[in-house]
Length: 102
Length: 169
Image (cartoon, rainbow over all chains, first blue to last red; front, top):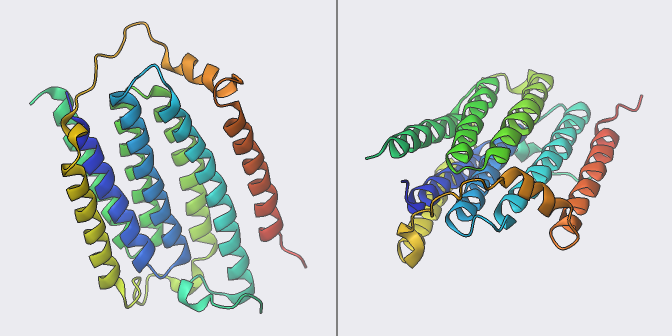
């Protein structure tokens, strides 16, 4: 049987990798890829705590389903913003997107 | 070491390697494809945790919709950054240090927690987690309000995404 600690450390490592991606990539789409990794790490934790706590209480899985919905919404709006900025400014580099209005 | 532990370790290392490739790959299409591998590893983790519904939703929603959306977005905006020039900003070492620090902090914090070595209770036989999850999501005593808020959020995101990306000519 896998102890709870393995899942938590695995999720912490995945979260840190995603955070590195968010902090150090230049491309706005790559930053969103990092955010996806971080959301997945959180979801692993939620599912693990559901399994290792009381299985009859579904709160962990319900929370994970809500995180799925939020992630889908985040990606749809985020990529729409990136594509819109790309059309107007012809760039997807986060450093160069520093004006609220052009 | 039991079979389940070996499967977990293999899946975890493959997922972490895929995650590292997502954040370091120069070619963004490859990064998006590595993301598919990482998401699939997470789906296997859900299956190991007996969260069958989450595993299926992970494959259908994350791999089927979100990863494909990423690949489309990369292909639509590829012209100006096409694999030349640095893919990392000049403070990438700071991000790396912060990520290592976060992992170390989380690891130390978890080590100090007493529930760390907890093992799972035997999965109750005959317990239908998917049916129970469905009941919880729509019962007023359960989580119907967060469920409805999530659907409103999805509609708002859909309308917002169409509005933002609409090409006004």
